[in-house]
Image (cartoon, rainbow, N blue to C red; front, side):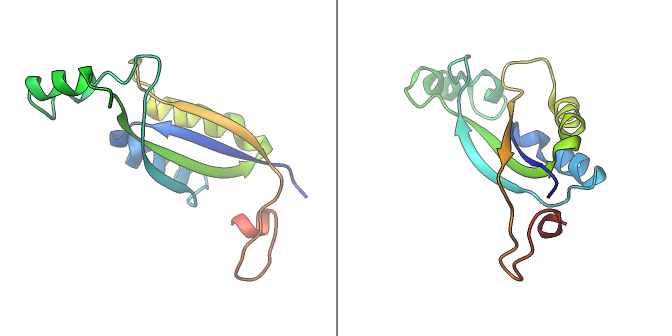
Length: 126
């Protein structure tokens, strides 16, 4: 069986459609996405959200203990040989050079099975 890897990408919500399109163009139209909240080393400061709320609300949120920023978490399983290309593409689509661009994690995948018919490995993915 071909070695598979799971890529977990955390990206900005406004980059979700571009990321989806990039994955589809690479031949990976199937993935799972979640709405999540998180914070990085910037401490969850909401400066980047200031355009959505009034300055007073942004300041109040920033000083509260709820300093979490909305993100999207994507899970996609790819053949091991494709990991560098997929990671590079996700970075290219999401990189702005600002705090909060996201993170990408690559994990080993022990196996994958399609529940409907019991297929496994690549057959279960595509």
